[in-house]
Length: 315
Image (cartoon, helix red, strand yellow):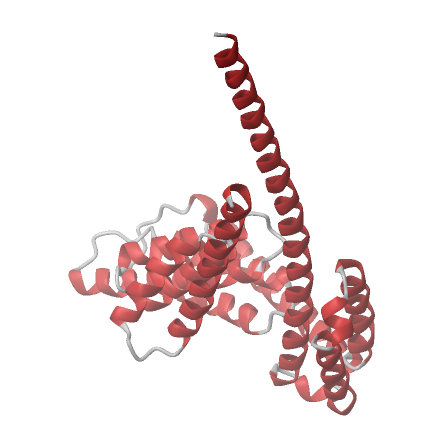
């Protein structure tokens, strides 16, 4: 009896010891994973900035950027990132490198930014003047747009939808930061508000309005993907894509944009499902397989990480 009790106590001690080893190994792995994730995010931010800076010259007024200075600067930054020094750099060094690069790149874009800002100010002033004129007209007619329940004729209401949609597109095309993308989204939402107020539609009119709504939901999703300072921007993009798919369940743009947001939320399985559907609908689409490869790589990385963790725990 005493021998059995001793064996049980010994087994219990071994069990507790093994558990402690597993817990310690898991904590160590979690710490390494967190550090690796933070470094990966820093590398992605730097890579993304270099890519964005390269694309600036193709934008409107991009010819004002000093390309002769910018391109070698970006090549040099990219070379460093993939060099031994860049591979060995931690989050702090990567962040400092990016901050210094931003300053240097901004120096090549002074004329470009001045022109874009002047155009933005002029555009906002024109929009405000248009809004003021519309407000004055509504006041003169005794109307309040926020509570606009008028049974407008189909062409009149359609004109209001299209006007706001066009203004949103103009803002989106000229956008250089999240402020303009927000303004574009606001215009598209305003167009949707008007689109909800049609009455007594014929089948052809319903089809035309639904096509407009679909386009607006897709545009709003695109805006939210770019409003990166909002904590819920990915959820908003997903919601807009889902609204678009409610109108057209086989819309490839909606599936692709929702998958893009899902990938950024690290919901890789859901992104994979949307991309599989998109690939089936549009097998010749070139963007879909690229994102599929990226998502598959992330899923494989997750599985490899789990295998390593369990291997250390039970190996």
